[in-house]
Image (cartoon, rainbow, N blue to C red; front, top):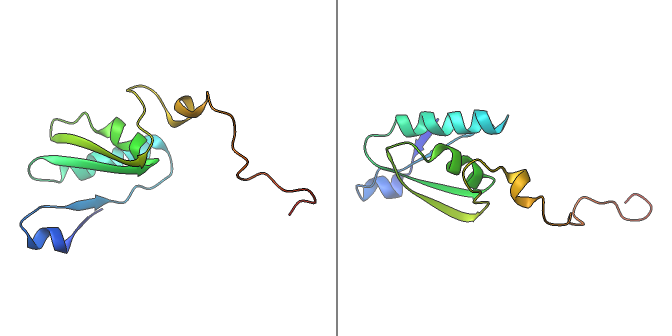
Length: 101
């Protein structure tokens, strides 16, 4: 589903945002490709966080004129979020403190 941005639209700029299903990378890329196909004219993809992986995969469409990564993973073609982050140690986020709290 692509939703229009009324501020950009009021200035004559076509703008939309996709709603990725977040079921798998393949599904998210497919949803983004459908959103690209529904646009008339050039497309600039913007991805935040995991969205950077999605726009990297979907961004080879001829309509795509650029990719913008906003605090996003920007893996080389053929790489995944897991392969890009694998060389780094795990963060303490998600670990339980002593006593399980």
